[in-house]
Image (tube, rainbow, N blue to C red; front, side, top):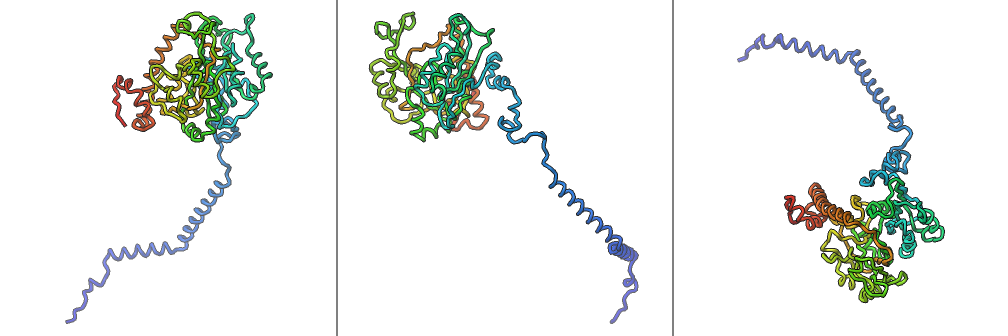
Length: 460
């Protein structure tokens, strides 16, 4: 049966009427001409503002902090702007050689004499120093070593006394008369001020480790032969050995160190009898059993002289306490051999990279063993060259050192041994490399030192 609808359900309520009214007002406002005009004006303003900033950014010159310089590599002195170039030479050298006094660093003259040749980067430079009283050693060096030489000349005692030769004038005379010296040798000069020079009678040890660092730093090739500064000569062409074996050069580039075994010519009394320990400790005059032109230049001749007693083993290479290098093995070997039992007092001549290797500690006067020990602890492997060697002719004697200074050096080196172990162990721990192969030398050589300090050694 049909029911008529309720009139109340057909008529809108008051709320519905107000909502419809609001919607209609908003619709009319949006559709109005004024609203459209405002919206278009806003969009146009944003577009114009954005385009203006884009054009301004593209057209603006690059911001320059220093208006007259190009900031590329600020540590490169060859660039137009460099922080390094603004530092004085004395400031740079005083930081480089922090253990030396300003009297030394302020009087260093790098390349006081520069060789005429320009060596290739892959050559090996002989880094050494020559005494001011024996500049003739330069002549011997250029005769035995065909490559570039970086030598330090340190004038540290008076040369203006009556009868004393002037080393500077003699150096220029030698260079003018010897084309090999002109072509091969760079001289870096250190002149101690007159007020600080030592008398000829004193026996204060020269700063040989400073000299080694200086000669190595200013070498103009990537690799150096750090020659023991006792008058030894490189008897063989070491550069040729590395050219003949490219795999050796690759090891050298990766931070390995190559040991050049050392030998000494035997000394005898004037009657020709071999010298004894008593002779060496007294004032008996001793002369080399081999003359300068009889020195061995190849391995087989050397072995014959060793067999005849004319050449003996250098204590700096062939230690009596620990066999860093076994002579009987070296005499027959034709390949590289690694050093296993390392002695902290091991101090032969070595071939190494010029950069990326630790420097000689300058707290010591003359201690090449300290240079090599830190290299060993830092992870460098030591390899013995099978056919190359150095020879000491016996003509130049090492400067005498007082018993007091010898005692001081011994005690300093004992402390240095502990300090180096702790320093490198801490560095390996901090880098997370204590169990790595690179840290194995430190783990093995420093077990006792680290145990004393309460550090536990974990085996890799």
